[in-house]
Image 1 (cartoon, helix red, strand yellow):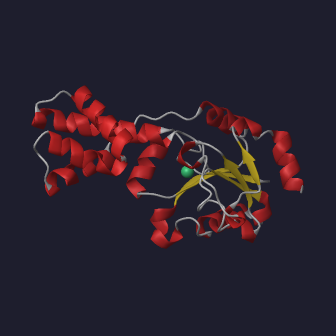
Image 2 (cartoon, rainbow, N blue to C red):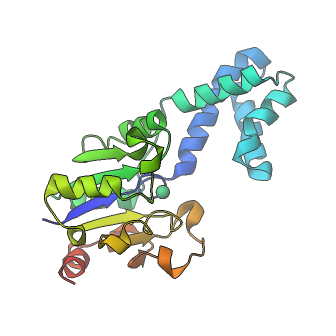
Length: 225
Ligand SMILES: [Mg+2]
């Protein structure tokens, strides 16, 4: 039976909601120390994110409130990474996972092990997937574009790559490592990389704008070709 594999961030849920959930956790931690209420701190962080980028947010909020130090930056990062996020699947992702609930479903995601595991748990995906591969658990060199976790899925399901479809959003790494091996690939155009141009070598076999386009008919045709 064909196997469906999904990327996590921006494919199944909007990654920015994780970032903002993390800002709220950091704001709650900083509220007492700065004597500023958490909602105000969140607004400041969102403003910095919008104008200077995500990487500057903790430094800026600490500087504004006179408590910038390496230790405090570290405390913010730890709070951000260890917080239990509140996340929701994209509505079309919810429908897609329901539609194919009887199929073998997998997740392959890069990123910090603990952070990714908390995202998967918050979205209830451990229960809906046959297995969630967090590539970092197998070493940094197994991150995409490494085909390692995809080959594990083939072994586990006893299917060739041509019977395994990966749905991802990032053309810089999601398809280039596996498509040459015969894996099937679909790019969903949304999130940070929706408009990222890419070389032909990095393209997916198909591009879609919504997971609603992954119908049984579409997949039947794909896996027969
Ligand atoms: Mg992604």
